[in-house]
View (cartoon, rainbow, N blue to C red):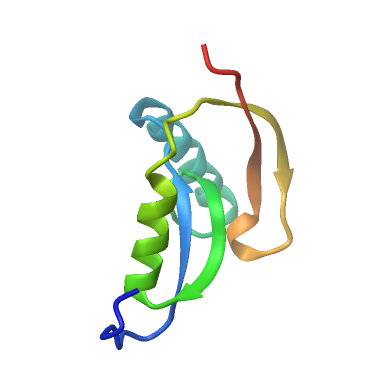
Length: 100
C-alpha cells in the first residue's frame, strides 16, 4: 500500500469476464429480462471476490499480487438461481471445468 495514499476507502470487487461471444449472448438475455421485469444494468461476469473496503492503492496491490498466479479458466453453467438482493436477482451457478 502506498503510505501517501489519502484516497477515501471505497468498495471494490473482482469480476471474471466471459469471452466476448458469450458475454454478448448473456448481455442480450439480461437486456430482455431487464426490459420485461426491471432490474440493474451491469456487465455479465462471475464474481471472484465480493465487496471489500479499501483504499485504491491497497486494492490495486492486492489484486496485482493475487492475479499474478491466476490463469484463465473455463467453467460450465450448472444451474440458475435467484438471490434476495438487488444485484443478485437472477444468477447462474458455475462450476470450474477440468483443464484440457
